[in-house]
Length: 160
Image 1 (cartoon, rainbow, N blue to C red):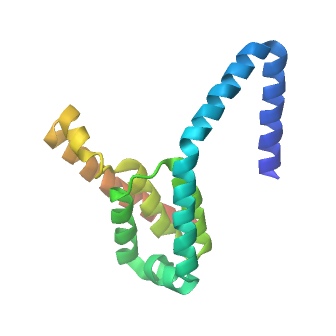
Image 2: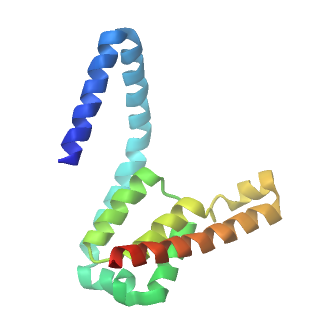
């Protein structure tokens, strides 16, 4: 129901925009389409990767490595994978939802997503170049610790 409401609001906003200035709206839609075309290959490749992983791994395997029973090792493992993976948020959230549906635990997925968004092992050399080695390492270390804390908080909140 929420999705239908959001689509309705978006359609209403588009209609108002078309009414106010048709040329600007067409320009905006062209730019949005170009952005969509740029994002689509990356998005599809990640979705295919997740689909392949979910096809190969059954729910029991996902639960063993990322389920609530995996404990702190599952949280740390998911956090480390998230820290070294470079996936945009618009791909990470559907992937996280698919893993949750496949049997992963909320704490483990929160660790994966939060470290994915906050820690940048892949981008660390560039960060060191602009901010200095010490600042980049400290920022990433604190971001990783905070992602673990955020995951623990999410696990606690979900268990309420």
